[in-house]
Length: 257
Image 1 (cartoon, helix red, strand yellow):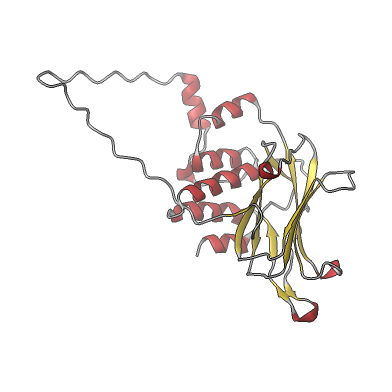
Image 2 (cartoon, rainbow, N blue to C red; image 1 turned 135 degrees about the vertical axis):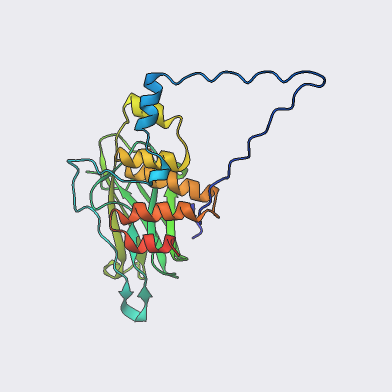
């Protein structure tokens, strides 16, 4: 795809450098190692409450959100002999949350397609879409992403937005489209969670977001880790596990290849 879509690439996690042994000063006795300051009870409690990637990423869906909001785009034959792949928005089958004003949206395309692709974001009670972008050739199969930040689109807290991805074989006959639909709502994190997130990175951050019900942020955090370390297959396995928890089996299978 030619516009500002980032295809999510294979994952890799950076490897920590080995610890170095301090070199003693010439002709002297090595200085004693500094004493370790015990963690405060509050810090220990916060650390214990932070999910670790050793335990995987477990999504805890918030209660009270509107369900049945995801629609998968079934592929297949269209008029004129065109055969199109399936499309899936990578969201749960319920309105999913983000803490971010300008998150990324993710979708999965089951096969390559040379037809037009469009992504649209709708704001409630507004006739004009908040965002509509497209390219003439949808491109390759796989997991794809679009950053709302790159398009200067900002979500308002508390508003439920609908977003769609579509393959458009005939712009004059939209009934031929393959279309997938999801929803997103921005919710501000509380001060304690925001403070913990500020000191958490990579898969651990994804696990923390997922445990607190922030689906879009969890998916973005693990995908960012994959982009940073495309050779680490364990990262893709973690994302696959996250996708499987909301019945996105085709996308998960693509990560396990």
